[in-house]
Length: 316
Image 1 (cartoon, rainbow, N blue to C red):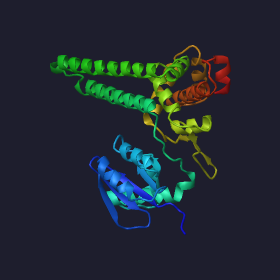
Image 2: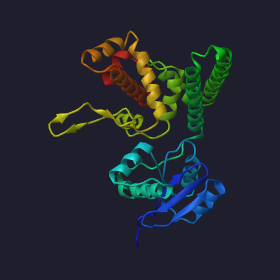
Image 3: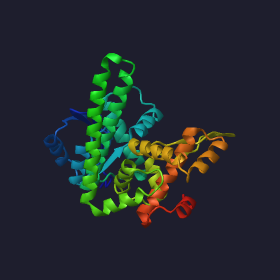
Image 4: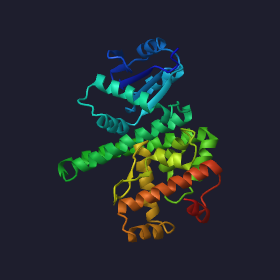
């Protein structure tokens, strides 16, 4: 009897999902609707592996439904799959090809993978508010840049950007309401905001991400942020280490913003300047500060208390 789970790779798009079973050439086309997904999932053996790429909001329903019906679910970083496809010499890119590639990755890398788990409703609500806020911030920045230098549209640009800012402010108010509904999350948020460089939005992102998974330790959390440096060596060459950039891009972005704020503070400025004196580039120095802030945040999450410069800077 074969006890190995059957592995399915799913290429998800807005309208359809292409499903490839590992070892089977034919693919299955499923409409991206809950009823169609449930019908397909009910035909699978319980414990089967359903793997997919993180594609904004499009993969969320399938991941949740597959988990609810007793499947092992894996959601992969797009960059990871891109490098894997290149590594196996994948020629061409179509939905069926990508579905087979995802199934192959899940099959061969399964022992190293961490299964996806659905977020709590509270964490999920915060994450969705943060993502929507980020999209509005990007839209506002793009609009301001694209219409700058056009006096004829100055009034219209101001009106649109003001409306976008009001929506951003409204989302931040909704975040405060969501935090207030959950006293443990609100308390964690207050403690995280005592870290120099961490403001309301960064603190909210940290709350959502720290409570999203059960991290084994601080190194697991740093790896999740994508700010973990990886070796870049070959033979006698010792290159500058590069970031993995796995995990949520928004978390990395906000930790970088926190690092920028910290670099200007009385507490972190000497460290920032010492990094520059050691030939680190400005971006590299800020990333190091962002990573230190992430380590301190994890310590506060795991052990409680508020930020203590003398204690936590030594640990970080």
